[in-house]
Length: 161
Length: 357
Image 1: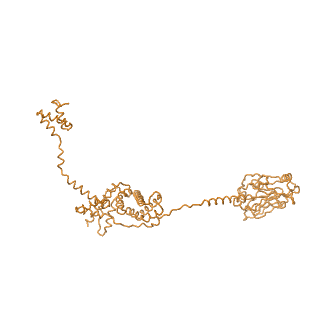
Image 2: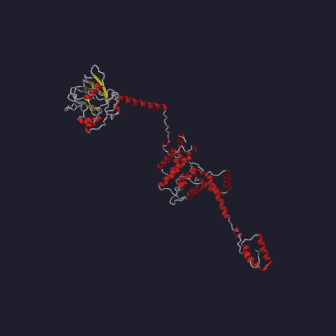
Image 3: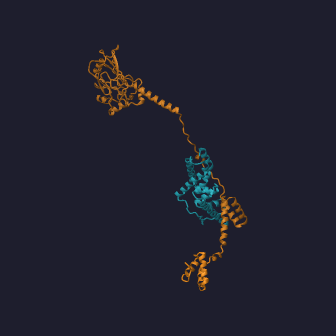
């Protein structure tokens, strides 16, 4: 990976990685730090990274840094199943986007990451598995559970309406 | 072993457990035909075997129905994730057309798909990098550099070798320190002390007694009563008319040290070798930059044979002037018009004036 490839990578993927992290953490400052660290690692290891795989490599680093950050801050929930917060009530003025965002935030970190990687970046199960260090079948199962949980929440909200 | 009335029960049990070969089974059946009284007993044993036909009567259709539902739900999820191949996609489309539940499920599932959203990373330019390319120095430039350094060293050595000489002038009898002698001009001193002492002009800080001078590479001559010593330039050290010693101090730092604490300098051999002009006479500590300035700095000592015994110290080496004159006579140095002769001893150029040469 050359200097040009790296700089192209910054221009193309910095926003994507930042979106992925900030959607997970919901903390812009920490997300920015993680993105910066990810690119720093990419620069250090540029000799070993092929330019075609730079995006995947970047997301892998960012995901791991995020998991480390969450572990350090004891914010990571290891519960895989969707748990609906009974206290939350739907407000009619909220837009669908906000409802969807709420549904996303009710997922575990891993499930949320999988949904983000799938919907935003369009990665396949196999690629998501490489990034998150999960098997294809695990990705499939976690992602499907996440979808069903989100659907359940969204349908419930619409039913209330 | 053949079946008979003694062992028929064992054969019947094996038959019931289906442990006999077909031939053995026929033997058992033939035996029962031959002995009808055993027919009921044989039938009772056969009825103890459970009939697996009972399970087939259960209705598992609800399970099969559930399985079908799970199948299209998974297809719906895979379709949402774009993980269906063409064949599966076609199957899924067929299911959607036929199954209303599948359509409802698919519609609700589409809500979970995140809309594309752009969040820009601030200060993206800060992440950009530029590689530092290594600077290649041409080989010829390296050689030139080495040559320049060697030339500098050679010039430095040559410059050092022509300095540090003492000229002995029979008429003036002075010692001229090299230019590198940096004397403190802030405190000009003209001091005359008792005989055998000396005064330092414009240098200031050092007034040494005889012992100190001797220990600290001080050069002086004794009993040069009639000679006037003067400083040639502002860095010269001059002795007065009454002084009988000539002090040469090359390095002001050394002089300053001497005033506080005399520094013992290793004695340098005062070899009398006219050819050796670069003998180190104990001024090895002179800084290189100062030595470079010694272009015109000759250490000159002028002597005149007065017939009396006197001593001269050059680099801590005591030289009897009368012996020196004798040696000069013995070696029959050429006699000049002025009755003077020059010789070099340890960077000191000594000019001797005597009528007896």
